[in-house]
Image (tube, rainbow over the protein chains, first blue to last red):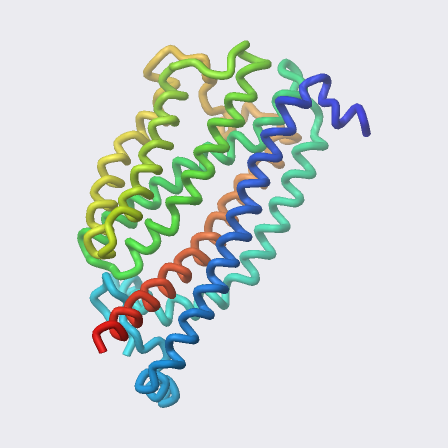
Amino acid sequence: MAEFFAMDGYAWFVWPTYVATLGFMAWLAISTWRGLKADRKVLAELEKDAPHRARRRESGATDSTPLSGTQTSDA
Amino acid sequence: MANLHWLANPGRFLRIANAVLPYLGALTAALLAWGFFAGLSAPHDATQGAPAKIMYVHVPSAIMSMAIFGAMAVASAVALIWKHPLADIAAKASAVIGAGFTATTLLSGSLWGRPTWGTFWVWDARLTSELILFFIYLGYIAIWQAIEDPNRAARAAAILCLAGSVNLPIIHYSVEWWNTLHQPAGLLQGRTDSSMAVPLLTLLAGFFSFYVTMLLWRMEREVVGRKIRQLRLLRAQA
């Protein structure tokens, strides 16, 4: 096992590449997921405070807010 | 174009994405876990020895750094020409992922270069053009952050992305056009033994699957973020 981690004396070249790459991938996944969860919560609060939108949602139209920067709406 | 327009409804897109994501996440985890295990337990390279283990992260990172920029260029063209509402969102959502893989490509290449070439860095064509790709990614991200109106930001970013895509063939052919320390690609030419090619291809599939997973999450985040912005604007006007 120690021999495996030593990488024939090249441990300082091999392992940092794995740590950096896996570290970046883990950071990206965690930060993206956390950000998405937080933003979903903010959106839910905002939609709760906008009664006319809530009514439209109840009547079956999900995602009633058109995207800015787009030409189509969901309604 | 019919299919593209069918997906142009962000609500429908998000429903499909959320249905696919659990399977995609599981596939990504399985491919990466097996790929890293197989790569690290594969025999050492006959001539390079242990440093060649760096290949298992360097090659997939490098391919993704270019593939993601290529995908962004296609999405940017679709956004500019057809005004597809999800195209600029897809391009924007890809940028951080691609920039990250470009950084890991440069870092892993540098750490591979020291024991095999005797230097961390040389200003040759392959390395320099990949570094330029990294700067183009940073410029693209900076445009989105600098311009507040999404329509204007999308247009400026798409034009930068299309102009920057000229760099992709330069990176790819740099090892053939110029004298360079960097070796040409050998993976798909049957010169790589299967004990190394199979883990490498598995990791490539894993990195790609990771990209698609992150892309869908980040696209949803962008859609949600734009709705938040819109609702806040409406409220400010009320």
